[in-house]
Length: 335
Image (cartoon, rainbow, N blue to C red; front, top):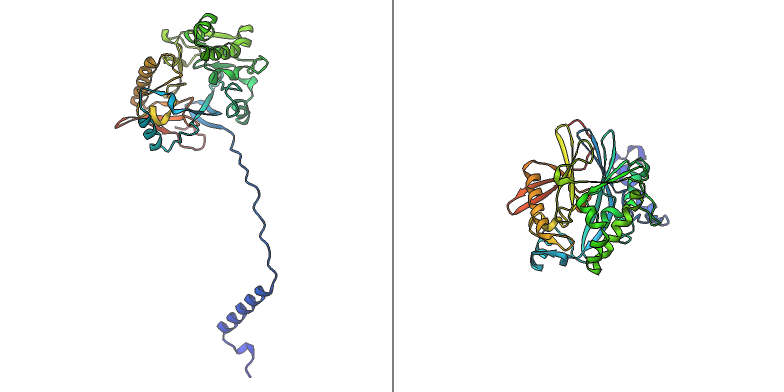
């Protein structure tokens, strides 16, 4: 009889494999552990990039579902077609981001708009948490530039009990906007349904007015709220709606506020307005002008209601314009 040492190697391998299979069949079944629970939380809502030597941090306040019926100068059919083209759901509403921007200029820490705080429900109010997650505190902000005094841009200035959220900051707004939204007589003449917007604006700036730290300027006259920052008159959405052009070296960034509310419809059809516009015809003309300028000059822009982080470029399209968002990447200042 031949010993196992004389058996071919292939036979030995097959025998070993058969034994392993037989052993596995006799072994008790081992239950696989269940995976951990789903986390269901999002990353902190901030995004950072450099514009020349300016550090720009986009801050996510949250979102609000906007009824497509609020869009004007169009048809329901066209709206649905434009939304479907970009896979934007219309129920329970168009998910619309609310963004603010923190710009570190080297000499100032500037916040452009302050979010909605608790003025519009639980899906908004994330600015402070995301500001801290981004490495800053409210006390470090020394300047707040308001694009306008609607509540989703200004309510974040004050706490529920009327204290300043940014205790060391001076607030700047266009005079035409302040004269409109802070006026008791204008509020009294407004429809009942709109008076809450006036109350929000007054409450938001009240602690800063009391401290002598609320200032106005005239963007249409070329006033500059800060050195190196140009106020751009964008009137129509509100009487003093203003964008802010930050420049560092050869690079610029226009933080344009509410030039666009619905990216899926208003880039392709700039003539579409929204019910929130105080003067919708003027708002349409402003949007056409700003989009044309941004596309022609290849300008980096940031929008308060563009999909977060709301930073990117505008390009001409065969029918209107198209939005080209920034590409995620490391912080670079060597461009």
